[in-house]
Image (tube, rainbow, N blue to C red):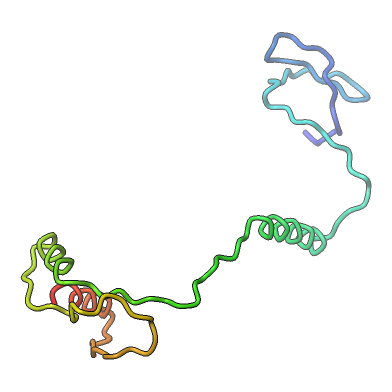
Length: 138
């Protein structure tokens, strides 16, 4: 059945069902009120796809700009090396053998600048786990 335009409620049969009519006639079929939507008449001008998407982008940019907050990053970053107790705790948790301490215990924290030492780890796709293993087991 083709769309015949907006309908108005002709009669409400009970609280859930109603009968509709358009300008010409009353429809024979009854409709659930919960399935109905409000009809808004358009202003007559059609938007092409580009204009529609441009309008959509403008509204999404406005929404993002209100919600977006730039985090403040401290100017100096600190490096906190892991200690022997942390390594031993992680080894016990993962049921691994603790071999040696990874860093010097006397360094508590220092400003993050150029690395003092670089460890060579094979970059074979498993390098994250190798580096974590180094930090945990020594």
